[in-house]
Image (cartoon, rainbow, N blue to C red; front, side, top):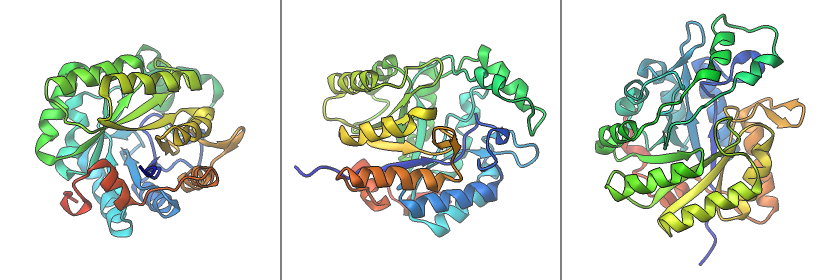
Length: 309
């Protein structure tokens, strides 16, 4: 059987990072849309999107903050749009589902378990912040529990079921794979599922090859052939782990949500620059990248003509 092409997902902007950390991180709706379009042009088949409140830059899940951004992305690209249901660790699931319910995208992220999602060590690296809420937000993550209970997962599955959305099941640790298997066994999700191994987040599994192999072997044991998978790794591990995944039969996710750098000590100037780099690596190693329509076929998506934006 021919090897499947590698799907590149680009996570354009996150609810975690702050603009102070990099002037290149898109924050306004116009910046996010522009960088998303550039990433698609560079080879990203899937665009994973968060948004921000234009009044103060806070993380937002309000549908009104997605409207203009989604319209521009759809008008300018054929890329698959993946809207977060993760939002930020401070948000409840009922808030995090609003945009997905309104816009009915082809894909949504879905976190498969609770964890201590902490990024407070970042506070020691910076002396000033662009917005007055940022320092407390970062330092406060030391006490965060990113809530994704079985009840939360069930609520997301049931509320979004009428929309025929394919979930990107974000698994931050081995136990999250078992959580997904349980949810499949009780009928919340139908195979084939799409897994995103999330590595290098403080509170989750570390970024190294041994852990990646362990995650993959566990997924094989639990799910057999009923899944496709991808890897995102935070910070400096982004490109090495993505490269490894592409050679193990997996797919890749890059983007400024996950790492602000293009190489050690050098900030990336855009999401597109990261997409271009991983595309070059994947192709130099003998694989091909998937177009958006090929990604739709591989992942069995409903199609861009059936979204609500």
